[in-house]
Image 1 (cartoon, rainbow, N blue to C red):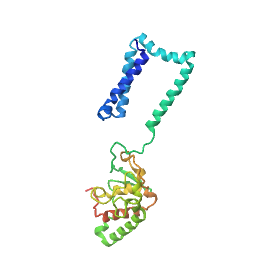
Image 2: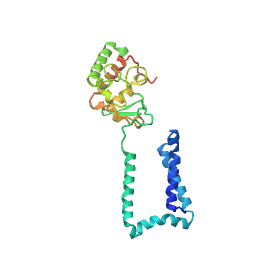
Image 3: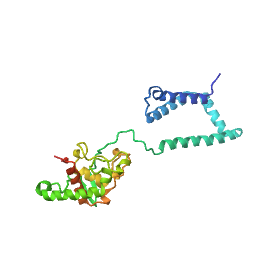
Image 4: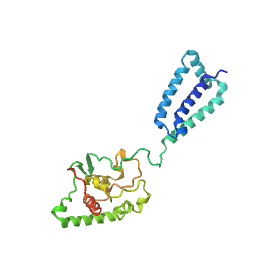
Length: 252
């Protein structure tokens, strides 16, 4: 029994796809979809090259397709095919591009690299030289420094503690609904590893200011530049370092 060329093409394509899916089906180790698409592209090209190696086999392969398009007696089948194929293509396309709420497979950078320049409050800052203007008061005028820390605490509890929590553990009432949860400021693995300029950048630009390597995530961090003054941001930074007994990193 001679198998039509078009049916051979379909069978060979399905076999190739099954081979590429075999590691997942039998070993539970899937090949990345991007690789399967690439493998299938080259497989289909190779199958077509074999099936069209001669003029006779080429005509045998495309003959049924040509007849489907041109033969008036196949109008009903043609119309059915012309409806089904676009619908299947639309379903596949939708499933490929539809948004997903699942956590990304790739690792997300928790502390992404900041930009070299920061533009907020109508000014441009060099992140390599940006410092908290009130930090020097810690040694020069401790009483004034404590006053600013207190003011920063008031700003924190008026705006930040709803998500980051009253103990700065990242367990605020609203923070329970976020994925990922707000980072805690306590401990030695978050702000203790950061310069104050980094914290200033993250506060003032919020979730929308995150670079690509830190996304996707459902960050609800506002752009605090729109709600807090520059002084309030620097003071709240004083507060979170002071409260958690962390020392900001310096460039030295």
